[in-house]
Length: 255
Image: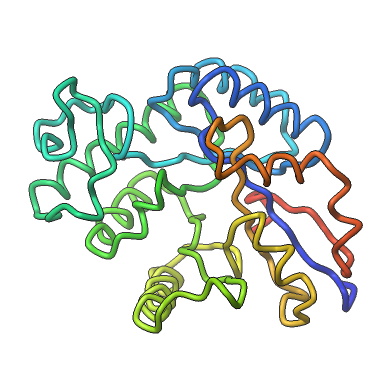
C-alpha cells in the first residue's frame, strides 16, 4: 500500500429503475468510472438490468432495499401505512410510527426483494437502501435479520464523511456514529471505512486523514433530478486528476 493511496468505491444507486438509468450506469462501467451498483428490485427495468450485469464481473452488485417508491413485491398488508391510493410505496418512514406490525411488513418486503434477486441469479455483494431507510434505528433489527437469513455480510454505512460546511448537528452526528459502530459489532458485517456523496469528495480531497481509507461514494447516473446533474457531469470528466492522492478503485467484492 502506497502512503498516498486512496481507495474509492463508486456505487450507482437505483439500477433497474428505468432503461435510461440502466443505460447510463453500464456506460460508466464500460469506461471504468463506476465499480458497483445497487438494484432497485421493484424497478420498471430491473429484469433488463439483471440480464446485463453478468457482462461486468469486475463490478459488484447489491440490493437497494426499498420501502419508499414503486409497488411492493410482497403484497404484505402491514405495509398499508406506506402506500398511496394506488398501492405504491411513498417516502414516509421518517415521519411514520414504525411499530411492530410495520417492522414485520418491511421484513417480508425486504426478504422478497432479496429472494427475487437470488432467483434471478444476482451475485449479491451488499445491501444499501432507497433514501437510506436501512439506517433508521427502529429498523436495525429488521436489517440484521434479513442479512443473517440471506447470508449477506456487506452493508453501506450511514453517512459519516462531511465537508466542513455540511456537518450536521451534534445529535445527528453522534447518532450516526453509534449506528455505524453497532453495525460493525453485529458480527460478520463488513463495510467501507467511510460513506458520502461523490460531490463531497472534491470538497475534502486535501484532508490527509482520508489516506488509506476505503470510501464509498454514492452516484445516480441517469437520474433526471436536478440535484444529481452536477455529479453526473463531473463523472464524465477526468476528475481523478484533481485529487492529490493515488486513487485505487475497489468494489464491494474487495471489502
